[in-house]
Image (cartoon, each protein chain N blue to C red):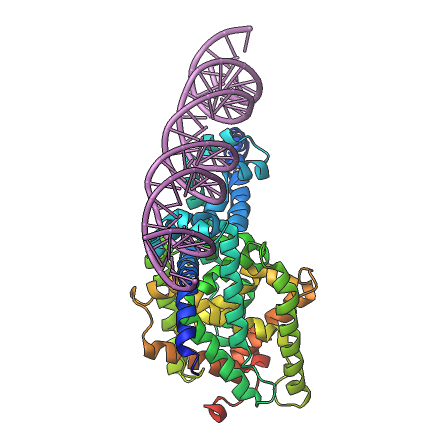
Length: 218
Length: 218
DNA sequence: TTGAATCTTGACTGATTGGTCAGGGCTGCT
DNA sequence: AGCAGCCCTGACCAATCAGTCAAGATTCAA
């Protein structure tokens, strides 16, 4: 605790690097999302960050390095949020919480979601190993949890895989297709009330859809 | 009817153009889907089509012209398939048919779906007018139809907009994220049986989710 | 067969862009 | 003040790529 000042100084020194890297990563995430990997230029990212292009190359040796860091960061955040899917909860609460968090993430991490979608659509050239190991493990664990609910007769017997895909698809749609959604909403972003209503509707349809009572967990 | 021969001849003449344009459009759809607009090069598309690059420019003046034609073609096919959403049918049959067709399209038009997703994710720079007019009209009509079902007490009172987005998201996910789905399926494409099961599961969850009996419409 | 229209293509060009580099600046410690 | 380590950046280069062009090949009607 009394290291605070020293720590502050030390951090302040290295903070230039830390802070600039974050600034560049944020800018890159935005530009990659809006233009794709090849459509994004280092110049665009530099402009977005308010730095000269050569400075980007001081922190990130190559465009692909920068891109990889962006995608890895997104994946980490995404998995973190997914931890909420706790097997100890009731199915109602577990699913409701998971859907709500993913909807929230679609709202707050729109650009990250788009970069991820882009990467996967193009065959995951950069993060294939994450799909094969981390995502697969996560998925298998959740499938087992859902299968236990089915075995216990708590939800309808459906293949958990298609249920998970449905949740991913629906929630991420609000980030990836935000432009289309806003166009169909008189060119305006969804309001707080609309986000709440959409989240509630998605939860309700899915809960009822697998034989749960949506009212029991509101 | 007796113009057949003459017509065949006439067509055969112009068929070189017709056929090459289709070949190029197909190749372009594939390459644009796998690499995005900027990531795709005219050379890649030419190689895919088995033609020299200069020949592409004989049929399509610019890369953007070619891209626009690809996106327009996809949109047309997509709307065509969507016609099945007939207001005269029962909600069960209308939704079941619509979901089944969209799932089928995700299987047969994977690349087209990806190009569309890419275009919308990047803010629809090319086909914004289609979103504002054609897609909006289509959506409004379907929302009215669903609202009538609600008013008649045939389905639960939910906002039809979120229901439509859910159907779009879920079905298109199988095309756009096919790589992820195949990775999680031991690196193999979904089998006929898996496609059928996924389609049935999606339909069932959505139908039950809005208060319909899935068994009534199988 | 002829000739006009359509189709084909290798070679070229100008513009864009990722990445380099050398030299200059800043910060904080002694 | 002096210096060492990090940070910054304008100018440049090589590679890539969309698009052009002029000359040749093919097709088909008369």
